[in-house]
Image (cartoon, rainbow, N blue to C red; front, top):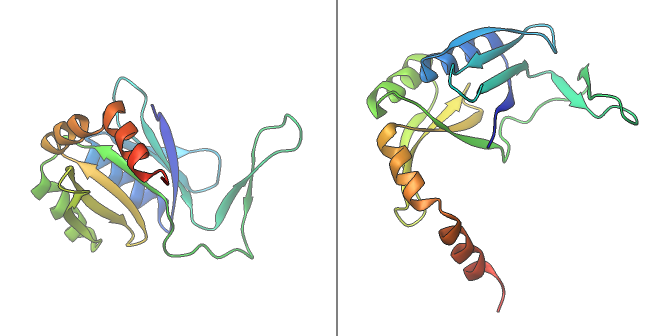
Amino acid sequence: MIFHASIPANDPQHVAQVLAELWSGFAAPFSPFPDAWMAVAGDDRGSIIEVYPSDQVITPGGGHEESVSYGADTIKRPQYSAFHMAIATKLSTEEVIAIGEREGWRAVRCTRGDNFFHVIEFWIENSTMLEFLTPEMQSEYLAFATPENFRAMAAAAMPQ
């Protein structure tokens, strides 16, 4: 189970507020970086998405020290990456897509796999993809995402 994750954003406060809206939660400042924010789902798992300024990085500490946060003055974040998350929302497909349209961010309903389940690709700042699943999509996903199905997929992908 994932309790929290972090994503970069050019406008962390605004992104956290939009994510909180999609979760029917709330946004608040977050302390690891100046100008960091968090979107809080308000669920029974303590789910949050930390939103850090895109010019900040997290690096490992030395020995048993905690990770260290630094500015990344010489590092430019790529517009896209292999990262994404699938996230539950109580909102409808139309409501999620309307929020994306309001923000000027790509938001589109998509089918995954061989019609296994559906998601709404929601591109934060047109850079970071989050997949939002409405209640109906969550049911599809849970019916598909079983250990048995994943074992069968892994077996089919193994070289013979």
